[in-house]
Every structure is written in C-alpha cells, then in structure tokens.
View 1 (cartoon, one colour):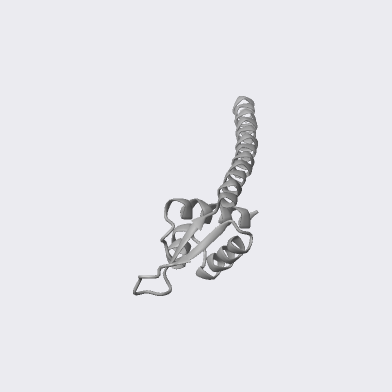
View 2 (spheres, rainbow, N blue to C red):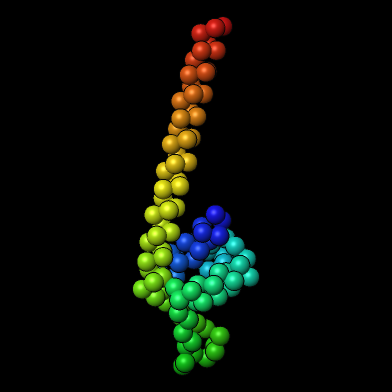
Length: 111
C-alpha cells in the first residue's frame, strides 16, 4: 500500500516536473534516493516512464523523466484507488467521531 502511495506521488511529481533529479524527487516525496531509484527503474521497466538523457547538458547524469501514455493511465488508476481508499478511511473516522460524541454526551448526562 505504501508502495502504491510512493508510486503515485512519484508519477504525480514527474507529470509536472519531469526534469527533477532523483534526489529532488526523493526530497519532495519524503523517501530515500534509493527508494526513488528503485521506483523509477520499476516504472521504466513497466513502460510507464521514459528516461531521456540531456544530450547537450554539461551534466551527463541529467535525465528527463517523461510519463508514457500507459504511465498517464496508470497514474489515473492509482489516483482513483487512492481516492477511494481515503474516502473509506474518512467515512470510518467520521463514524468513530460520531460514536465518541454520543458516548461523551451519555457520560456527561450520567454525571
């Protein structure tokens, strides 16, 4: 589940900022550079992200990470699943709050 969240965050970030370094992605997402590297390699292997080297860059390690059409579709699917999970969590939390309020009112009336 955390991997889905990390993957979604990486895809969302790269969709708007494809020129970020892995270190910058890691810092923004809040995970290690190694985790970002692992995630990007998996996304590239699955054909969801394409890495292009800057040919004219003085830094030969600079890459442009582009979402492929399959990557855009995967991002949309992950977003839908993430949203559904968060709505479910919200509803459970809302119900728990209502129960605690009722319990609190019952205890206040008993005193």
